Length: 156
Image (cartoon, rainbow, N blue to C red):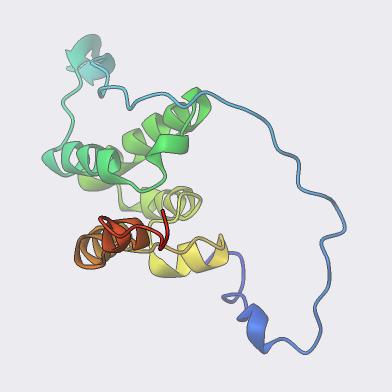
């Protein structure tokens, strides 16, 4: 089975820490929203004659595409990402239409976007559910300003 080797070792368990040789390059991009799955026609052979037929996306692929709206990194996706994912959607559709040899390429393409916990580990992506916890904690804990409200300095 093709892949990229074993899962990386936890950095805290390494014997030595090597710095990155190549510095990180940061570029500014403008993320774009998820496009709709396109409508298109295919040329199919029917009675030894080529005819055009409207492509119908499988329900599983439509669900997969809709799930991308909830992908935690979707706010960072640019046009090139969505184009790549549209091509991946076509492979996903082929897989669900019975072309099982598309599975390997589909798996590799999904891995690039951290679809499984192992993929996210390899990409050094960690999801954290802190937003809800932070909001609840903030509601429970008074700020120092609110606790000191109504108290004035002695002698003023």
